[in-house]
Amino acid sequence: MILVKFLVIFSAFQIAIAQRYNVCGDSGLRLVYMDGELGWVGIGWAWTQDMGQLRKVDLDLEYESSIEPDPNNLGKLQILNMIPLNDPKNEKFLNMVYEFNLASQEQIPDITKIVWKGVTLCDLNVTKPYLVKMHAEYNYYTKERTLTTEVVNRFKSKPTVAPVQLIASTEDYDDSETVGCGKVDLTNIYVPLVLEGQTIERGTWPWLVSVYSYSNLRLGFRCGATLVSNKLVITAAHCFFDVYNRQVKSEDVLIILGQYNLKRPQDQGSKIVYPESVNIHPKYQKLTKIDSDIAVVVMAERVRFTHYIRPACLWKGPDTKDSIVGKRGYIAGWGRDEHGNFFSELPKQSEIPVVSDETCLRSHEVFVRITSSVTFCAGWRNGTEGPCNGDSGGPLVFDRNGRWTLRGVVSTSLLTDGSNTCNLNEYVIFTDVAQFTDWITSFDNEYTY
Image 1 (tube, rainbow, N blue to C red):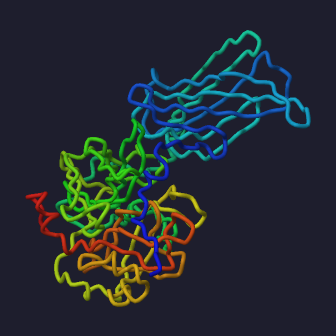
Image 2: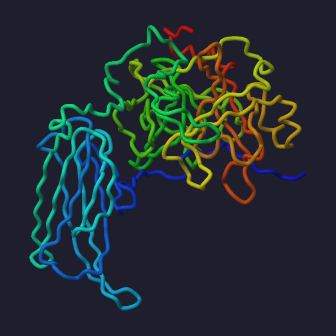
Image 3: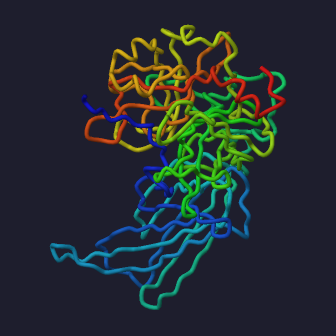
């Protein structure tokens, strides 16, 4: 018998445990969130062959904010050192290393401009109302450092120009009683959708959730998931096992509702939630049986629905797989992209068709061992479109009577020969959510269709 490898699509955690974000283009500055006391810390660097005027070297950094910054906590910026070096051609140059620190638990700072000794390292468009300007100076000989800061209200002097409201009044917007599940706030989507595996606009899939967990005190993205009520999130069971096949503790898990950019886990409009419990289906066995690859995360408190946080509907009869064979649904997530990146910074979506069990089983002999009555297969088998590494646990939704309804959870894929990446020349296996409705709703005694 020919042995064929298969995989449960890798949780992103297995690829990168810690998150460090390159900011302001290719400026050389990388930020990492340390803890509640230190907040965001970044180390940057730059090079120059200009060896003169080392007595006073200056560095400018600007970042923007949607809310008025605390004047007592605008952050720190300092040049740590200037290191003269010689390159292989024996030409002298300087390596400048600097540190930026903002003790904040809010969203990642939107750094928009960095200028060193008059040379612009990056310059991005500013769109938010508040701009913080920081100017650091360093004397290479005396090692003295100075820092000045300034807050600019960009719209105060321009009353005729309205601020750009990307997510205005999100925290106060609650339409759960009037809209219900499976509805998108179309007024809050500013550009047309782009399909076929391309980036989607924020708010397109407001039930798309990101799942994170801690390992060795480092936080890492693991999987996608789906919000189905103000209490419940559905994802894949295998998302809660580490690289050693040990189950992750509930207290080490957090989920982010309304997240869009993976580089901004605490962006305005998103909500970080620590679960009350993580419930893996009792029939799921990580090492011996991948059947029933589904889990329910119960949130400690009921969340309020907003422009960017809304539930998908749960499937309500008929629940036979024949009812969806030949139909096309939409998948969305931050998984591996066509450029080989382990994750996409922004979520992408694709429309894929569901195929019959017979078609799936005939396509490859390994599917006999990894499909069951509670799974179904879908995909194009074209090598490019479909869920991949990092998309585990994400939703496959269908438009039913004008409401987006969850039917599948991304579960399993075959491996590409010679690599640990998904093989999109084969079908992808989804957990059939319709077969678990009673089990899912048992965790929320207030759930109604």
